[in-house]
Image 1 (cartoon, rainbow, N blue to C red):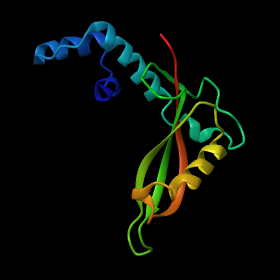
Image 2: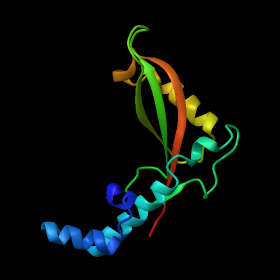
Image 3: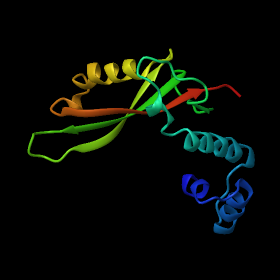
Image 4: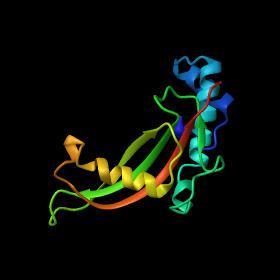
Length: 139
């Protein structure tokens, strides 16, 4: 769906293409997902321009109807490495919260919890970049 949105397809054309391939997607669900993806794509890296001591506004956050366990989800691009001679690995880490957070609070949360996450315990943090903010809304 992201590829179709990035490619400039309309929602109706996407539904028609899926039908031509033999796939079905309830129109109401597909349009809700299309709105979520389009909002997310439009605001995917806007949080990196917010000052570290400021709370993100609604203009920066993508509104989604996903089944998140908490109201806010923040995506952080984390650069890390196992040892100094190994190349840097980049991955996305999600932080879920019930309260809005500033970019500095998000980075502090990742740094604080990095050692607690078992599979990341041996890795050294090289860099953090707060990337995306998502807010769950009710339909």
